[in-house]
Length: 278
Image (tube, rainbow, N blue to C red; front, top):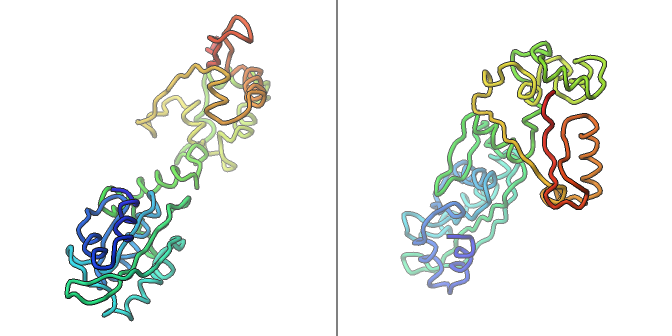
């Protein structure tokens, strides 16, 4: 199901609207809540959807029955404030009421909460973080929360310091060759210039993966993927112009990091690849 199907139900006539919303399946983008729901539980669903792909929560539906919200007006005000009172940062959401006929045959209303997908990570005030997975709002552990943060781009994983490491852990023929082709005066100067060590001298994730003797000690899931791409492929992937891509590639080529293979500038088989060590 998609949000379009929820919108279809909301656009039905008043006598069919509530029953339709009460009977469609909950999923990644849709959840039902009773009018008796605690504001914190509503905030939990809002955080989960904001951290995923957004979605809709309809309040006033219980166990596939239409109870409505009219008998719970004081609580409804607290539900409207759930994002501000219980989420950090507050989740962006649009909250409206829609008319319906409840299971007793009386006119009533439902609270419709539309949650926008967010570019940042949201959590509850107590620090709990949730992600919408299927029809569940799943609580994340520390590693899952960190991965979500990296996925959203609010932290750069490769620039994070690796615990209990120092710049002297980065050494060997690969680093020697890198220092030589870049013309750096020392290992420390080139590592610092490329943000491969922190100001405090710790190796970053990128530096550790590139130059540590045993990077699998900290990152056993790491692997090497070797790519050979043409200039046009790179430009298309990055959505850059070819002249801009060529400028960057030639700078890397000058540092001895990559090489170009082809018979001419018009060779359709010409590719860029990492340069092998001597």
